[in-house]
Structure formats: structure tokens, C-alpha cells
Image (tube, rainbow, N blue to C red; front, side):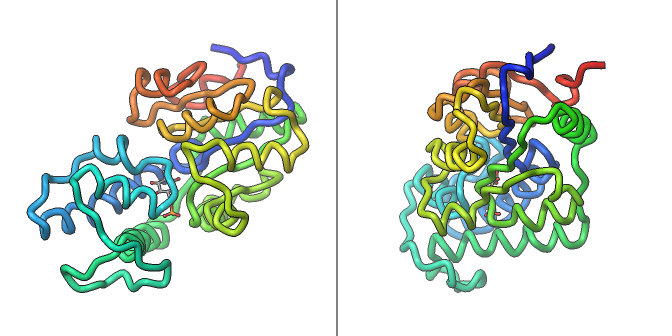
Length: 243
Ligand SMILES: O=P(O)(O)OC[C@H]1O[C@@H](O)[C@H](O)[C@@H](O)[C@@H]1O
């Protein structure tokens, strides 16, 4: 499989599941939080399919809201300052999101993280070729993940969940965060490539009229990524590094 990189000036990478294996860490943290919460409500059990359908790739509280909606549960929004340990029956959307965030942070601190070797190879090659590289992640933890993996300096800019909140940018599946990154790099959308493992993120790339949207299948499924608008789908970014 090959891409004619000379057609592009910039590459915009999602982080979790594209550069680092942290989609898996997010997934496990969400599963622990939602399994306990849904059991306490007597609601249908939480599964990995729920993650891919309702949570993956979206900003933190959007994921909570959309998963709860799938079970017909509505909670008060609360505020980002809500404590993670709210009493049963008094939970808020933000409190549940914060509870999951504590679990995510603990795993990141205890286990650390390294970039996927194939992603690292592609990033190094694209840098050698002079393309501009950016990270576009819904996660407010993106700066910590990049630092922990030791790859911060490989990217010219990082548009993460905190930046999006500050600037009032709509989260994925809206294209706004990807477009903000291309604008900041001074690259027209059709000259930029998007790499995404989440259906919501592929949809964002598709809606933003980017030159190429590459789906990375870490569990969402080739078909689901193609249906969301991926122009091509790989299992690993290393597949796109010419020998
Ligand atoms: O809660 P955070 O770290 O700001 O991250 C928000 C989302 O970031 C995305 O990158 C992940 O795919 C999601 O699983 C996660 O929920």
C-alpha cells in the first residue's frame, strides 16, 4: 500500500490509538467506570461495542452523555470541577467523566506508554520528507501522553481537548479541531492528510474535506471506518513506510 506524499504538505494525527496504544487504556478505564455505574442503575451491561459506538474519539463529557443516552439515562451535567467520587444516585455527567479520568491517569503513571513502532517509523520518514506534522486529539491528557512517550518534539502543533475547550471548538465528529490545526499550519485542507482510529474522528476528517483520510483499525473495524469516510484503512501505520 502506498501514498503519494508529494501531493500533501501536512499530516494531522489523532493520538490515542494512532501514535500511542492509549486508546486501549482509555477503553479499559471507561469500561471500569461504566460497568460499575450501569450495574448500580440496573441498566444493560457495558461492552467494548459500546465504546466504539458511543465514546471512542469524542471529548470526555460528550462520551459520557452519548453512552448514557444509549441506556435512556439522563443525568445533570454538573461542572468540570465535580468530584470523581460522587455518592450513588448523585452522579453528574462531569463527575462520571472525572472518575474515569482518575483511572486513566493512574494507569498512565504506573505503566507508562511508548509510541507504536510503525507509527514512529512513518513519523520519522514524513519529517525527513519535510511534511508538517500535528496532533489533533480530543483528549485533555494528550500533552501528558506525548511527554510520557517522549514524542512531543516530533510535532509542530498539538490541538488537544484543552485547546478545543479554550477556543470553543466543536469536538469530533465535527471537523473543527482538524481544520484549526491545518489553519494554524497554514496548509489548505486538500493538502492535508488525517489519520484516525475512531469512527467519530474519521467522520471529522471526512466532513473537513481533507485530501486523504486514513482509517487505522485498532478495533473499530475496516467496514465501520470506511463507512464513516476513510479513503483507505490500515492496521498499522508502518504499512505506509516505503522500504
Ligand atoms: O478524557 P480525555 O483524556 O480528555 O479524553 C477524551 C477522549 O479522547 C480520545 O482520544 C479517546 O479516544 C477517548 O477514549 C477519550 O474519552
